[in-house]
Image (cartoon, rainbow, N blue to C red; front, side, top):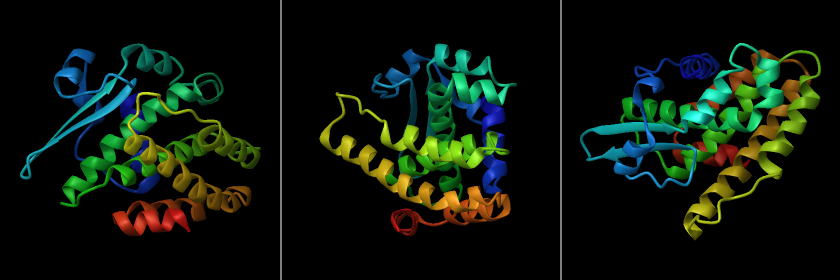
Length: 210
């Protein structure tokens, strides 16, 4: 599942990550030892000493197992396991984005990371569903991902602000993708997504907010 999902992201954005998310998976005990909060079924753990970057990815085993059952059936995955699939996608998105920015020796903000993950969930799901009826489905997906949301009660005020703002920025951007989806213009959609993915932090957030 993780290899397939990472390959989808790499194809979507025309990139190739030197590392595989599956090789950085850790269990709950290791995640806690590395500073994980234990609040989420998905966490990317990052340690940066200024010279090297260490990554670890935690995905709740039950979540990963449940989602993996539908790996070969995109329709069942999107209809029956959409929330779980989005959580797994977010974890892989975080991993790939941090690894890519590290290779470019560029720092990434938490807001940029979260906003990109929200866009990635929308893009991956839409492309899996591509075909007849995708426009209406993508419109409903915006409601699911960006409007009918709840935030963990244990979030600090700055954390909550970051998640709310990432949601707002991603919703604005993904809404602007709908005309290309309605027109069935996959070329236009991919061109836009790839251009935006490569923007630096401030430029990306400003582009999302337009």
